[in-house]
Image: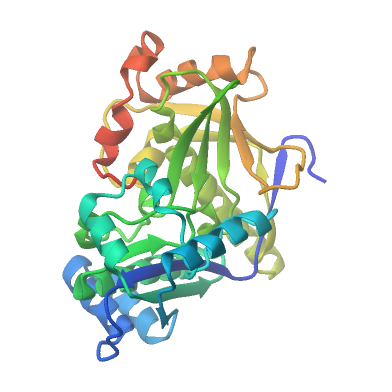
Length: 351
């Protein structure tokens, strides 16, 4: 059991990042891993390019080709998985596909939908790796490089199997990797806002590919879609703190993996948002958040994001001043007038 002020995070022995590339035809002449290496030659610089190419040649990424099932069969399989997944974070079955009606809220474009509907086969790309900074980066970026390479070569479209209903926007297939070798977190997770009778809630999807629970904010007042920006920064700081704790634990005990212990209060800096989205953002400061697990309700165990213990008020009262502190004081005046901030910062349809 966690002590007050502590957060215990279980980390699995092997993490996974997986994609299904929807393509037409069963072309076996092109090696998916070699297509990934060619993609790196075009869209990545050394030394990261050589590091990732070497890891691909060492079989960090595995691929297989499947015949795509009928739409009815794929949807039935998807819905069965939704019913059965219980406590587990989302881990998509490549042969189970969400109904197309789910995709509009995830901004699948017309050309992405055309390719998705036309596909007859799936090239499944999977990387498995431990929870350590270098190997995690090799696995996450290596899997995406291979998926991008296959999609570009075959005229396909990528479905992210770590997120329930996400197709990667086509313009992202030619987005170069960062020269500093760091992960752009927004390429690998999403933040989705939903509304209910007690306010909105904002939930990440995809943190499981980093070995971590997904994050959630609840009881969000209307007009605060900009909190998605804050959530990306929180997710990045959480990941960095967990990786550092795991490295410290291994150095001190010689034991890799397993549980990591973090303080339940994090200070999120402007640099975290810049790193999370891979873009410079002006006028950023910092803010403090607290993380905690809710009482187990039998579903996916989400990590709540809310006010620090010394905040005098409710979570609903905390969001505006916290965002204002982090993003700019004008948000305190009229937060509903900032719904476009999230889209302007990311500049892509798949976020």
